[in-house]
Image 1 (cartoon, helix red, strand yellow):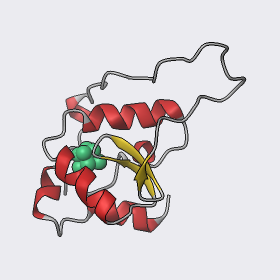
Image 2 (cartoon, protein in one colour):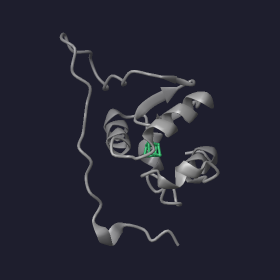
Image 3 (tube, helix red, strand yellow):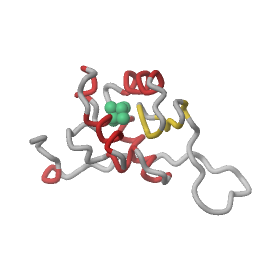
Length: 115
Ligand code: SF4
């Protein structure tokens, strides 16, 4: 991942950003938010689904015309909300529903202290 993407996840110049669930000041979850596979994207969206600043996150990402990543619970590419990517492989004969995952809790002993 580029340092730009990491900077955006850990930057705190928007006052609401410190409350983002992805913001552990280390970019530990960046690999989920900037992934190119459907499972990681679904996991990122699950984290956003319980984020108290999801609305602000999505609005500002669209205003910035964010080039890539999951922001505010949506996959954004080229500054626009994109539908979920199709999984790899042959397209099914009948459309599959979007992949929605429950968030897997992180064991307390693995949560960083932010120091
Ligand atoms: S909505 Fe998602 S990407 Fe935005 S701050 Fe919250 S957890 Fe992070």
